[in-house]
Image (cartoon, rainbow, N blue to C red; front, side, top):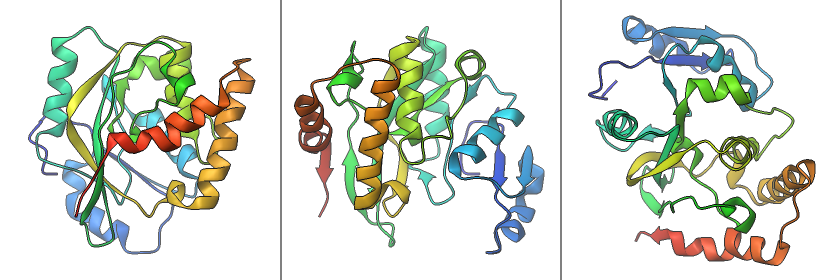
Length: 225
């Protein structure tokens, strides 16, 4: 609600929560385009639900426990689309703990050809693309439980060559207690990433990939005191 961009469509997908979420949402019904309540089959399924309701030209997702770092994030994203012939954008993301203290910052890196095969990835909560991309290439593949975001960005950027541009600013504060932050989830996530490559008959240098993704990636993080 703090965003200073006016032409904003706000869609909430609630999986029949029992934690008082709806009573909070009721306070802002006049500012929300759609509130969809009902059980779902997981985060990916919920995101696909949202796509069915979205009418805007550009779509992005914000999880319930994450938030924008400042009030002009959407304005910055909008200006990037206006200033360049692109299909999508992404930016930097800060990690916060349960006390909302910043623990590290993911400094994103420009995309380059075959970057995914060398361990590159982007902070998905900062990923905004044109709706037409979802129409052409599909939404979330719900067969992936941890790395559905990797599969989606890989499909959009590597396989279908949509044009993306990096925004050199922090856009989202991400709570680091989510599903992908646990060790067992990271192991499952790696298996899913390898399945993405296998599905598309792509061979990668596994040692180089693992180094860049899990060791070299440390270089992109700023550790905060």
